[in-house]
Image 1: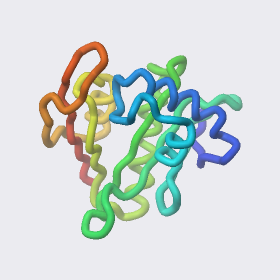
Image 2 (image 1 turned 135 degrees about the vertical axis):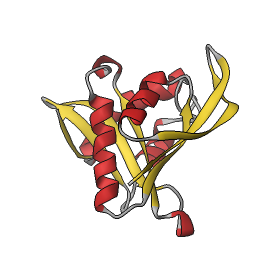
Image 3 (image 1 turned 180 degrees about the vertical axis):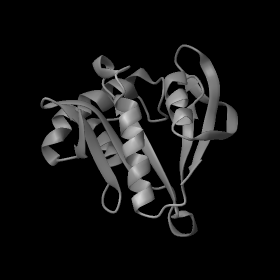
Length: 161
């Protein structure tokens, strides 16, 4: 598996991953009715942000986007988001994407990386983030409407760099 910069020709492979995850409504706060055009605008970061894909043998297994968490006085803290294709989960793709994002942020001199809204029910992601140095710094109770579990907490997670 290789992580590389997103190319325009990757979108037809990235969109099905994004679509499946967004439509499921189990992990992201995006509107499940989001259109492909809306998803592309949200997912593909303009410089100085970055979008990448994890690919193996010409197949896109996952994708990530990263950039400053906030503009101005908050721009010294990075953020990132990750999506992994259903058939590639459990193979280390998410871990590799997160490690890549952390490396990118370190190289650019960010002070830390913050995730603003990690569904507490997304235990696989929370475990990955914790292994890579993130801590839960707060949880907003009931802030995420999970389609099967009802209202669950949204974690704010932070990793100093």
